[in-house]
Length: 338
Ligand SMILES: [Zn+2]
Image (cartoon, rainbow, N blue to C red; front, side, top):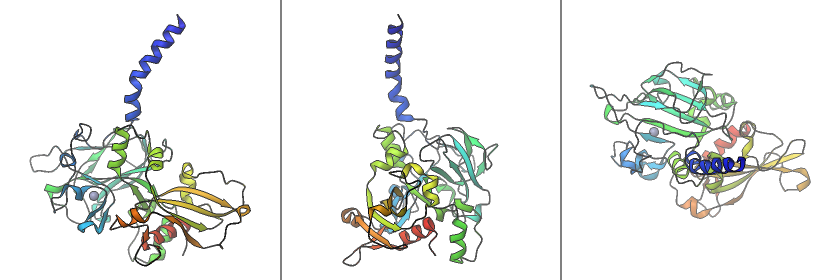
């Protein structure tokens, strides 16, 4: 009797599981069902003035491939009488609100919210930009469930977005350092950092649409698996005995234990667009060459680098690849290099 019940439960689970696994609590950030319905990007991606749908995707999609767009632009499906969007913007997973920027002119993101998904491993964040207004109870520290209404889609920004191109700019990513302010002060920008460590310059992102597609196809069941799946474009060794904030914030990205060991370097695998996605600590007993402060390219993919017109982790100009200015800036933030 008991066995039969167990068997019945098992078969019920087998029916339910594929659906649960595919979704894993992850929802789409807007009410537009087009992606879930398998429609093409024209049905949900907001293009730039070019009118080319790809210009609203993640990647080297702007200025003929020369300029990077670090998120997805999603258009509204409902508008009020004056043509402004009325679509709600939803938290895509449970988490904690870590940043709310209320003044449109303080960022090119306009009014934006960052949610840290602290129950995920690694605890990545999602970012929701250009909002018209915020939902009830939206404040730093508030917990949100998957599907919580964060606000209303809009077109707020430090520049002007026409009503016809109002959209949600959506990112999935990681913050490089908790001491972003230290880096910011050293740059002498002459303006105030109003976003703490949730300033866009401190954030690195993955391709949200590719992640959602991989989830939908069942290729991966979470972001951790997705990071394993995407290729490393370069491996860079940094000689230091320090443990960066990034490693402490995302310990799941470290390949082996380092506590109590004599750390001499980190071998870091970078994704195509510069996410330091895998960290291998190196120890004194391994007797690797190099001195404190050395930065070395260990390996790279010429094929992938050549395919890319912007945001390259390495520059391929000369005979030998060089660390790009973008990667140098990332390393400065990660390690506090001056
Ligand atoms: Zn955008």
